[in-house]
Image 1 (spheres, rainbow, N blue to C red):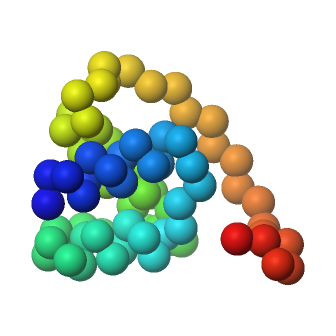
Image 2: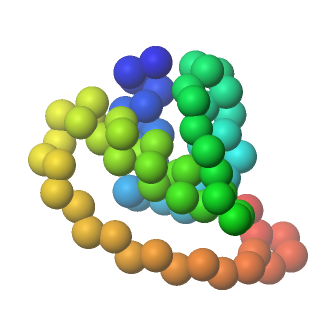
Image 3: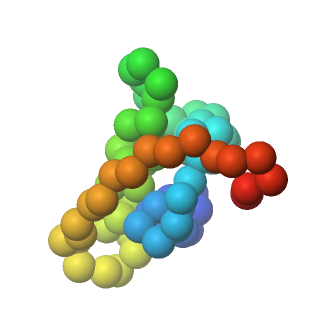
Length: 74
């Protein structure tokens, strides 16, 4: 579990993640959680919880940008 959380945390800092990725990890390890509204907070909360496992300094800056995907984008 620790490796999966650390990898998820790094990916959250470096990439764009989908809510279902967080939900799959939470379900895989039966992690209790609650999502509000559109559940976007699950990604950040899970990434923050696992960041100590990465061995990196626990100081990050966050830029949040929500946008709709265009047809054909991944």
